[in-house]
Image (cartoon, rainbow, N blue to C red; front, side, top):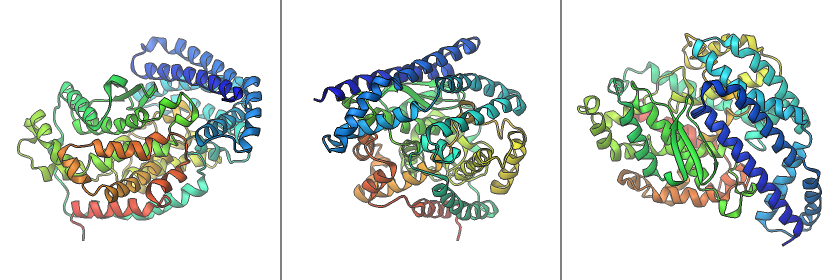
Length: 502
């Protein structure tokens, strides 16, 4: 083996291990850390970010990559090694353009911002969070001008999560979704029939919800020997390695469906993480693809599988036995229709699959306006409420239920939101291919046999890590480029049947 490549592997794995420590610090901050430790944790994270930046910009790494780039051009490497070299080179060239001061300031603000956001959300005071948001915008624009100066700043931030995707690609898709989904939502809301959902409200013991959450997560395939489940303000999937995957949810005693489907969603993320090819080492090729592909895995399980009638039929007995006071007199059909109820709401993470894309589009349009300076941070509460009224016909009564509901901006994650709806499009297209290749899929779901589905996802998506771009992956798996028609047709067909639309 080429000595330069051996040196590269050693350096990349050290960086990966340090990033793993950073991930666990972030998980601890949101799940376990005492509130009084926020200042010290911010300093710890900033210090570690500085160390990682030094390793990632070490001139010796650059010399190593320079040597390997020459052999790479000569076609001396296989696909796996080629991917590691190209990803490492891209990351190195980006990192050396970023001043250490900027890296540390972003890391420290991310830590402080999360704490400030939590407090602002609790007290319904957007004005307390606005300075963090303004500072983040300046830092992320500076970051974009450093790393990808040929792109518009917002495109550079999107690229961080969705490689190769730009506003020019996203905007037409989102405009099409608005054109198709807003009339569908209006037709549903104006129709005389609406499923009864009253039995989904009541008092549901947290310990019973947690038992169900762990059972479903394990049934689907989450390996608790290589992961854990906890509670946080905002559900997420974290951890440091495929052998250490950490998922969280939140429980509401008045709504067991929210926590149940939240944990299924995060389990989808976790299965992707546990399915990554870590046997190849802690190297770029083993990393997950874009956030859109990652989100496709969570939505695949949450929407395509767990909200299906087949899934409901398998678990309905468990649900009824766990919460008999609410579900004793409810039929399977009534339960299925209730959990697929389409009603515009204020909270994105609680939104149904028809209204959810409008929540994402609203955020995308706000971020785009903030970056091109056509929108002002101070005006966001009003802009948010106007867009909610325009797209979903409702106006949030508080900023806590509106502009302050998401944690993403508190960590500077601009450009992340589009991945959610891109993920929904990917998930639908993947599912259509799965059913084509495995015609007995619905029967397997009804029997609680999820192994063929998990294996298909492992083989088609998870095990490839970062070997393919999302555009290549969707083409390899489904034989077609990303096409929103699959998603639009799926929603129209499903909800026309549920709501008895003509």
